[in-house]
Image (cartoon, rainbow over all chains, first blue to last red; front, side, top):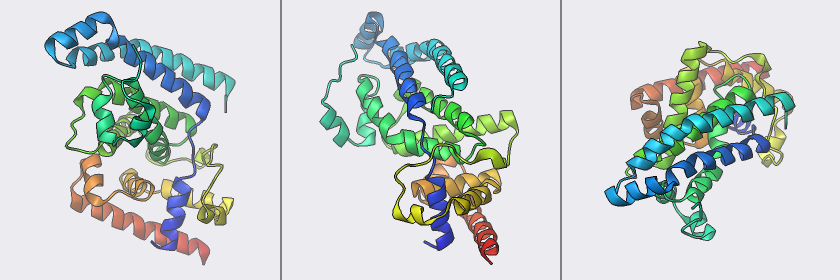
Length: 82
Length: 190
């Protein structure tokens, strides 16, 4: 690798995700994931042997999770949590 | 509900593809993938966007998509290619919406790695800003292949799969980007 390529590589690799924001995002993702684990979704999955029910529920849950995430986004913008 | 069906040690040793197959049944499998890919995906997105906030927004959307469409992942391809393809699509959508093609000068990342490698330590802050701007000045398609090549060490075939461009097109984009970067950076030194 040439010198300029090494510099490009190192420069691009410098940014790190802000831990506070992405920790909260993981919490929002967990909430989103847990929706399809409701009993009826489990039953449907068990009866049909498909993960489709989970996927549909996850897509529906995405509306709520996305809303929660935008709230998180606003909090971080207001507070500028680093 | 929410209890991992396999131990954390096993998750840490599992391949990306094995974890991806478990995501619909075990959130901890997704959490492990999140830990593996948050940094690479964020850095890739950050290299294509003008500021930290936009990069955070797009990265969050990438992981929302990754979890909501986990059932569509097919193990014959790599998980890395799959999630970077999602990132590529999200950046493309954002770019179409914002009609932005050149990253502004205010875009130097705020958060930087606190434990840089020895090579990174040898590069001055001024140098780093200059390199970042040179990459930001590349056309979007060239900037994207440069990031995938140098950040992720991906080969032409994998970049082709992620971007939907032919292998020949990826080679040409990389070649042109390398020429531009070499000329502009060596020109600055002289």
